[in-house]
Image (cartoon, rainbow, N blue to C red):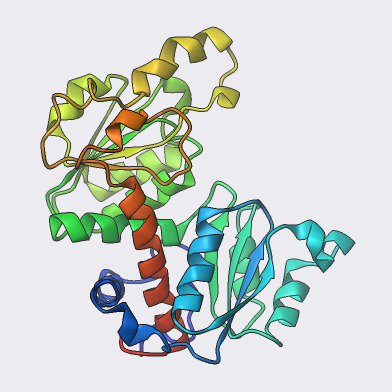
Length: 309
């Protein structure tokens, strides 16, 4: 099995073929979850969360438990030896004595690389600062594939905080590998994508554009990926007040959208998607959260070499 024993640190660590295998397995799990109830029996997942998380941690823990495995770990560094100054390298070496696979979230960029480089067991990056969040990318891609059947020739809009949103950066990088994808970036100038993301888009030859006007491009979108416009990122309160309501998705905003539009959000949301949108069939963000558990089940199985992938 090609993925057995490997780590997932960045979104492009796996080829498109390997990712397709993961999605195939996730779809089989969705169809017949009982067939995988003991796929990881006797195996232990260590969850090392150095910063707060609800969805990602619960998703990984639920995934391992539904595979028949067990979970150990910590959800805040103050409850571990990290509070005594222990290094990531020493922590992961110690955890390797007890667990078969580890998932780690850390506020510093590059922390997952350090962890993976100091252990023989697979390490899954659950977010390292503003850098990467590869399993959220797997979640996003699976959700799109389940609805659209693939990724080629889609027009995907990203709206909100595109500067600091690691989920946005990771998904854009992953989409660069598919044919005919068109990217539309919607944000205030203060929160546009970083230069390195824009350079990736330019170098790939992928068609993309940047705009501040969501209404202008809404009718073109097959997928709308929403993130929160964050007050704390603005130097000027007046600019925030002027811009914040432009990116709240409500029924009026999606009136001109395609009936087949998919609205995605990595969650948690604050007010950037109105509650009235939740009942619309184009709202996929809670299905997206559930799909995260299934794709993480497939990933854990693949890295441990258990079950059919």
